[in-house]
Length: 449
Image (tube, rainbow, N blue to C red):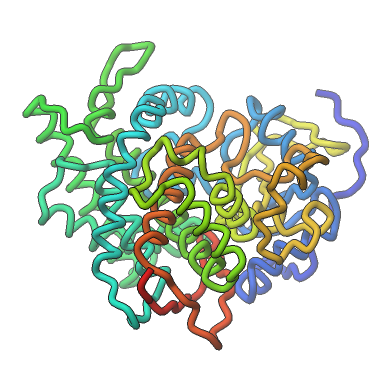
């Protein structure tokens, strides 16, 4: 490729020798990344010593990066590091032909028929959780939604493949793994080598989770029975080139990554949904009216999901205003031109869905929770390509997007049909960015439907 003169890429304010942008990132990483959007379509930040990251802000260039340039890009530090931290590559962390192979092996687990079957399992877990809530009880919503997300994960992935002891061990160790992944992905590599109690706990919990999943895989393989869960589907998957089944190590990596990537994000979005509905009486009234009209008092099913347009708009708005992605990475494999800039091989690229979805030039009154912005009469002027990316785009778009939307709809509707939740006043809720963007403490009081 012939290199042409390019304007210099501006550096974000606040960089210091040796530590780069560590101080503004530690002080308020979301505010820092949001401020970078004002510096230009591409902006340079320093997360690691001697390794700048180019933040892509322009929607058209984000789409170019994710779609048009995808064949020449690796997945970048965030995903490479996640694969290393979790002990093996998965469809989320693999790149190139490895990613394609992983994706084709996993695709049957996310087909429409399988997702439809998962709805009953999800709804049972939500009902069991909600039945334990009592009027007047104050819930720490994010903690409750995290537990519920773990229960739904276990129901759909393991169903009958884990006994109660193994399930409780998974429940005990997974939160430690999820918290540790966030820290290890964002901090310099040398930190994880320190003899710290947090590092020891993470290593022990990761080993325990992989061992439990590995035992379940071997037990199913030996028994040669179909438990009707995702684990059974993965055991039956074959490499389309070699015809070989997935190894136990591969299955462990896929499930562990699914747990880390899916559980926390689902819990966060559900928490924000309950919060926004609870503090917006008009939205709650319209949401409940739609449920009454469509469901007629019966439990939600998979076939009901497309018949709930206002509910879909509420969830879409939560994915816009409260998106969990704050730094999604790619890396150039060769010299690459994006927009008017030529970037050398090995350049780290990133974009921030959370900041993108709050850009006032793309979304008027961006901090207002407004489901009607997604109604047909408000969408006469389509958004620019790359402006709204709830599940990414291109060949690495989230494989579980329909699974996640169905899970969120099932959980939200089932909760709403059983209970009402009122926001405890006087406690403003702010987003907090770790590995993902999460809500701070949300306290809500239970009352009868």
